[in-house]
Image 1: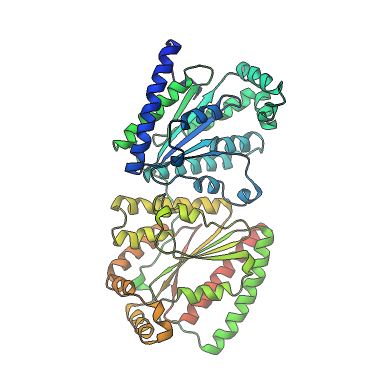
Image 2: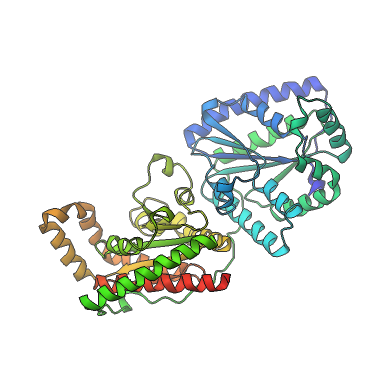
Length: 491
């Protein structure tokens, strides 16, 4: 990759300064433009220690309204960050539409550290590269501009700059132990960077290698950045094929073929419920000790019994170790980011359980049927959600997804009961009745969702809920079996 070092014709310093000044003015105008067209821009600056990453970012942001950008200087993950998936802290920092985010190092710098210091093996390295490429491609697919720079300097130049910084008490703090290790093993680090950049140099987010020794390096960066913004503003997108990655899908029946005649009598239900909840309580303590994260997703028909089902699961859990996340319509901050952003923000840390009452699958149901996103967006979302769950599974999460199922007549009975019972009327809205009119369309969408997103690592379970007692027990037993299985694997 280092042979891709961006060349630039020699020029007098006065001419270079004049062009940089003109490009800064161009960037200032573009900043207003991206705000109007709601283009989110991510600029990642990687490079060798003492290559000038910080000073370069400082120079760029002087041309931008301070209300329109955020700078993130990435350090080794904190204890809290280390208890979440690798991409969690980066996905949380993506900008809103019309904003810039600058990363002073990022997911690549952390990966190099994992490879060179933590001895990441080849399998994990391949998985990391897959994650990074998926992350960047999803951002670009969803309207983001991602511009990646690597500032390159030879070892002799780094030696000289390190010596100068270390000779002063006021600047020696800028050279960390990791920087010193990088300098000592420069050739090995160069080989690792070269391989990593080669594997992540994609049409969606190509690398730009900048000569960090030249006075003209800022000119190169400004040219590339402003040209990329101009192309994105004109609607020019990278020309590349969608990923052909396949997922280990499970066969799923159509909803119409699922019988709903299962029943449990009240006395038997009470006995089984208590036994299951006691069992789950014990398992919760064990997964906390083993630091196994658990993600439960509830979707289903209105009035199918999601709330009561969640309540019976939650009753068995330590309140310090779980969270129920009800998903409503996104707020303005959520709407202005990648649609998965609000779900990444709610991923549990290791040892904890998060229960989603509705989820990211709204993309292929309500957003699809209500025209809240483009057809290309919801069709692409099946792959994106499989990737999202694959990332969580690779991290170690147990993921279980429940479709709480009833028939149309049962829904009408429950709607009518809610309408006629004063203390239950808050549960029924005009939107519920309106959605009911689209039952057949929703059923088609749900069947497609189940067929395309039930994977071995994040399976869907259709939960027959005409008898709510049966449904509650079935979910508890599925959850117990899954937790026992993963705990056994951890022994």
